[in-house]
Length: 185
Image (cartoon, one colour):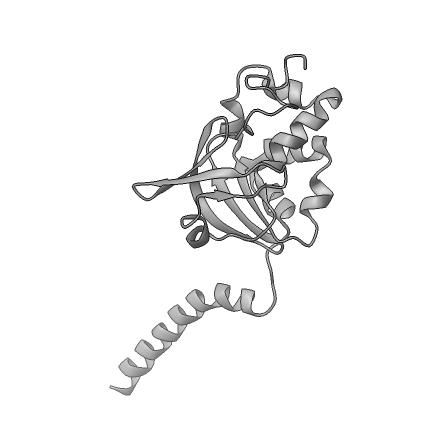
């Protein structure tokens, strides 16, 4: 009887160890990397990382923050009209690329539970992004609409929420509707 009790206890402790270790690692001060480091470690964000580099925003998003980044995946960038991304990555379109990317960044840390209670969020770009919740799904609206597909990816300087579409800021004097990098201003 003692042996059966000991082996059950050992099995329970082993399971507890395997489930508790990851939680303890974070408690022991092992924080995730910065927003840029987290994005670089996920191949689904390689296009975003390339765009951040082209816009000169890597250093900013490695800074103290806090930031909330609504991060488009590679598939989101692939939805852009043909040639748009290539045009945006050109040096002469750096200001436009920066405006688009900073429209995806809020200058505060907003977890999913916070975002669902908001109608809009300020962005580093300057214009707020509209937030809508329909049937439990969070959507962001600028010139177009993006759906939040994954939430609360922790970074040491903020949080990332994954979106399925590259958001375009509302039309302004600097960026007219329909001008996504290929047209003249």
